[in-house]
Length: 144
Image (spheres, rainbow, N blue to C red):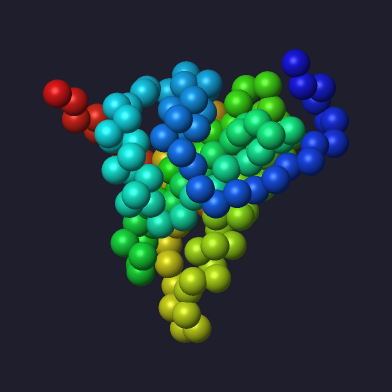
């Protein structure tokens, strides 16, 4: 068990393995995917980061998109025992910085996201706008 508010030495790296991805999404109770799907997803990712504490992957995040006009934050997750310690915010901010660094002068890129229920305040802290009266997110799972 990790003590809350304990000072963590968080290291950020810029790759995620298939096993790390599957382990992280399973740790937060999300749907799992086949190894083939994850391999393809990681190869088609614009940006990815993982957070490491004491040589253990404790969080991941990705950005997917068209590399030009729009992108989407995806798979932002932190192991439950490490949540509420700034790791998720560090992941999101690092991904935002990576996008900003690649945008040329005079250009803009929209970052979209579909937060899991209850996480809207977290993303507001990261600078995202939430206006459900103007726009709402929707999704559809296609499964075979």
